[in-house]
Structure formats: C-alpha cells, structure tokens
Image: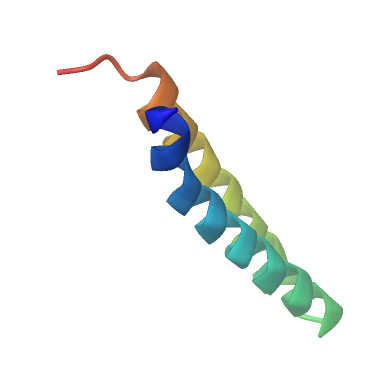
Length: 57
C-alpha cells in the first residue's frame, strides 16, 4: 500500500505532462508534443524502477 502512495505523485505528474503533450500536438507542435511524450514515458519508467525494483538500502 505504501508503494502505491509513493507512486501516486509521479503518476499525477505523468498525466499532467501527457495532457500537455496532447495539447501541443493539437496546436500543431508535433516535435514538442512527441518530446513531451518521451519525457512522460521516462518519468514513468524511472518511477516504476525506483518504487518497485530498486533494492532497499
């Protein structure tokens, strides 16, 4: 349960970043939108690794 609570802030940031990327694509900024999607995916990958797979201290 604690892992899911720790995982919640990066999930919210990723959702916000995704919506910004979608907005950028709708406004015609293809390069920026794709870059934001890559950034959102990177945040999720790092968060999943840090919360679920990294060995504890």
